[in-house]
Image 1 (cartoon, rainbow, N blue to C red):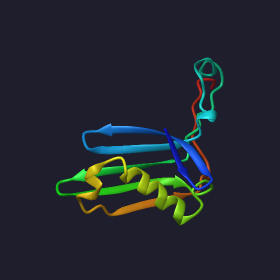
Image 2: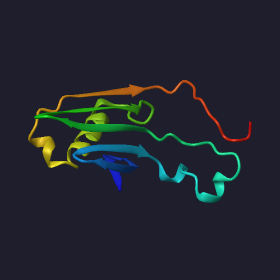
Image 3: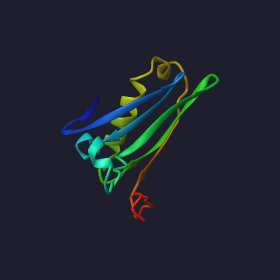
Image 4: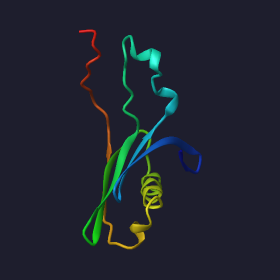
Length: 114
């Protein structure tokens, strides 16, 4: 499945747990295939995640998105609307949101080589 907004497009993985929904935004061309996992692997974390979680009569929408990709408020709001469109419950409940735009500064890695 794809997320599209104006000229931007990326792949998404969608995970469901009861009524809750998690969306991962990423570029599938940067994903490793099976034979690449045998040698040194650099795992691409993607562009971020959004989670819509329902609690009682309300819900919460939170997550983080890479600010180099999701560079405008409009693009972030489009991602939020994309997630909300996946659940009819999002129109029935109060659903505040907090989405962090993050700047990647470093990482921790284990690749089996050391």
